[in-house]
Length: 266
Image (cartoon, rainbow, N blue to C red; front, side, top):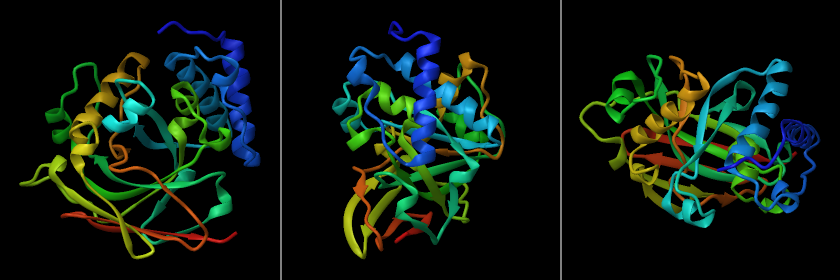
């Protein structure tokens, strides 16, 4: 896709997202002003935003994939996932209690996290390469959030906004891939004790290992290698679920076990 924005325009939009994250005041979609904004423009904005956050002392802990399900790709009329970095300040452990007012418009998703034991890079990374580089899988929850008002996002908007990442939490139980296929892992997702979704690992681009291979290959032209120890969130296994104060979310996976987040009042 041909880029629409100049580098200066991308920087201005990145600054707008930076302020929205700091103030928790959402902004209008960039695609309202530029309807033809391309995915490449979204990543240009994202890079300016990431640079500012790194300048503030943030550290990249891992990466998240979005739009890994066919349903979400069809919704936004794309044929590939998107991605964004996950910063260390946005990472929590099982049982975390997070204030709802830390976010703008949070939603919850159950995911499979992959922890790398070795560094991984493209351009010819395969699911087998990912398997050989993986320390193990973890049960994970992602709070997705949008700095774009009312979640009125098109593809370039969510790409620019760090793939709509808010925070992640994952279990401290790391399960080696031994005798099972990640794509066949089942999950039951509940909110306040009621089951609201069931899914399997195959919802993440057909196979969570394939999702990580796609990420490694996509980052390769940028000179980025996935480092040992990085956590890769492989994408939502179900539709995102609205969050209210007091909600308790549990994603319970075959083999991996459960992960829980409680959303507190301010």
